Amino acid sequence: MLTGRLALAVLLALVLAPTAAQACPHCRIEARAAVLADRPAETALLVFAPLLVVGAAGALLYTSDRHDPDA
Amino acid sequence: MTRTPNPVRYGPLVAAGVLLGAGLGGFVDGIALHQIAQVHNLLSARIPVTDLVSAKVNMLWDGIFHAGVWVLTAVGLGVLWRAGGRSDVPWSGRTFVGALLAGWGLFNVVEGVIDHQILGLHHVHEYAENPLVWDLAFLAFGAALIGVGWALVRSGRRDAAPRERMRAA
Image 1 (cartoon, rainbow over the protein chains, first blue to last red):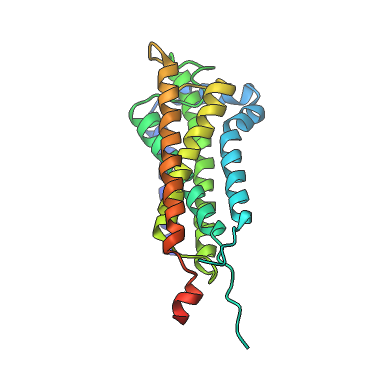
Image 2: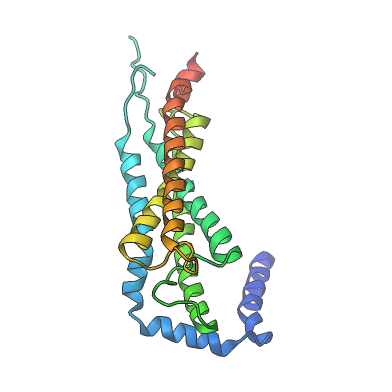
């Protein structure tokens, strides 16, 4: 219970820290707006493409399960 | 009645190593290149880093990409855990380390070919006089890691025996 509250407090502090420190909140808002305005789903698909290929390679290796009865 | 020993299965350990290696390699890339060297940002060829807003846009996509890398690492850990519980999977250090290196190399090669060459999202060093040299070096490093990793995986087949048989011996 105490750990949960502590984790929540740390999370809240991290979220509020940039605003509290006045760390250029306007730039952050502008950047987020730019990301959301410029086909974010399509960009996300492009960004994740290499990871999807690596994941597929891992799945192929897992299922390939080469047998070597002499080992 | 003689009991037929289980066949040896390398796939789960190699898959776990490759996924973990790719994930950890992605973190090396993120920490060393994106954050410390401040190059190789995700969309820097499309949105050049010219001011704070464009830097933050790239930073946000870097973060989204590395969240995906974290998922890849977590999946690799899960696969390793499952492989560890199987008696037919040889527990070979050489196989696992080889797969880790091959996974790191695979990350570099796949990321380099797709993002740098095909999609043109970014280059390793956007601000260099000749970014292609950096891109090719990145690919060559990845290919070398795959070569060394694959050789280790193959050599691991000699010293690996399923734990079921090791316990019986």
